Image (cartoon, rainbow, N blue to C red; front, side):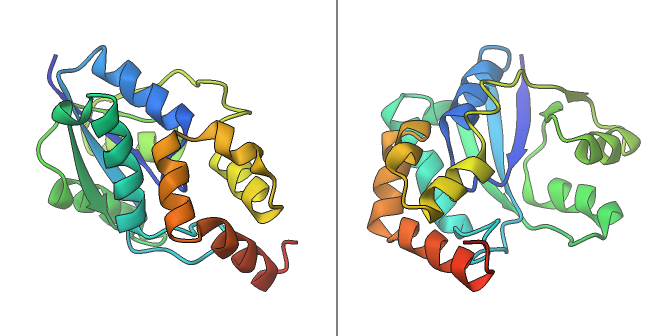
Length: 175
């Protein structure tokens, strides 16, 4: 058991992410949660800021007693300059022994840099999908609330996040 890194955009942080963190912590002592694309927000695919995503994660983990085994860091994206991305990870994260990801490009880049990568089981992937959750928000369908921790829903409500997602989808002519 050691320290692992789990990277995601967490747009928003949902129950699939939470189950993945629980699973990683059943194998590792600590997990660094890397909020990827940290500099991107106010887009249909990335509606929430890094700070908002950090609050979603922190509040959920605090209320479930997992916070003491996690560290949340921001990892900016390199926008298609893929060879620089691993450098960003090493710059913005403390040392870790393994990265958990199912993203094939991430796996390739990390392994080419000599970093050990392990897959994560998917936890009801079709149900717990950030894309699906954002679409439900844009459609004003309250079903999205059953797919995220209560803490995420509270933060989304406090920032009028559902309205933000709907407006971003309208601007992009997705609804």
